[in-house]
Image (cartoon, rainbow, N blue to C red; front, side, top):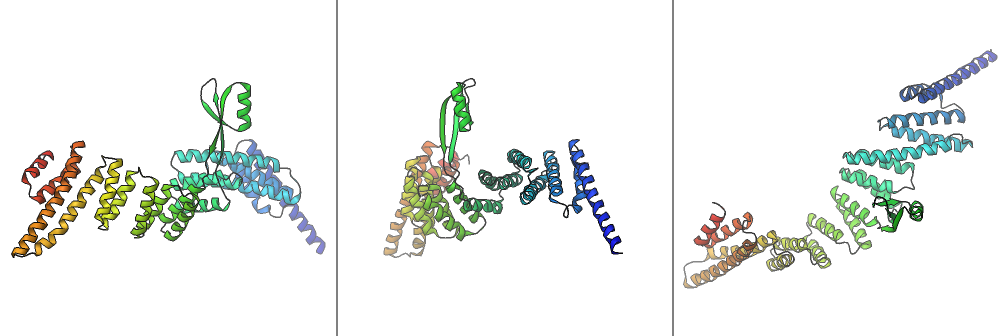
Length: 420
């Protein structure tokens, strides 16, 4: 009885092995005939029998499966890339453990081909604004070929472009973990026939120059991308509401790139968002020292000072902005507003005064001061009109000032200019 059981088990094992080989042969034949879907069906039928098979059969099965899904990916099924890569990796693992390498060399070649296909497809996806798909393909390219860390960098860039910030953050953190720098050298030469400057690898470029078909070889250094990565990491933390991590990232970025004014500005804006206006002002002042000819910096410092009631400091900043750009309309309007605001600040006291001789004297004193301030505000805008006579914002504010001053003649003049 024991012998019969043994014989039946052996027969069962033989039938399973036969079925494996039949399905694998069917898949191989279908692939050669260009029918990847038929190959996939055959391999799915064999999948349940592969786990107990020997290393040779497992390697063959995974190799055919990798080829099948690679064909499906080439046919437009982007989801097939993962399966192709997974199967080809299984081939390498199986043959490495078994000490045999029947399929390993071709598998590596096919993985390299998939990497190229993924990158090309990602470029197309980026062009079509399918940033999520592009990022995933570039990341997969990096995982296939970890030495090519630039794929990981471009995966992060695609994720940022698509506003997929959490995924971009993962990629940027991984770039920092692997110590990605991104600097290098680009080798260029001019095609003597077309006159076009072309990029090549160094060996090819040097050979083409020696052949006489290219000239003017140039070795162009590309800068490190570490600062950009840290900066983008900080921006994403801020975007995600993780402000403390963002501040840490900005501090790290500025420590390694102290001359990058954009880092100072971005950290300053984060402090402003967090309500720390004093630090914002300090950092904006630092930025303006770094770029004294940046009118926007001076203007923004003026805005914050004006919000905090520091009118003299605000005026100083607006005037610096106008020294850089005399036609900076918003600086002109805000500079005028500082005088109007100061004048308006006197009205409350004027309204509290009575009819005594001293009160009347004080009222007249305050009224003259108010009118002088309003007049100063009007003068700034009248000067602005000499350059931009049709500026509606300037005209509207000027009309309001003359109305508040009771200057009917100028009030009507400005109304006419406004077409009212």
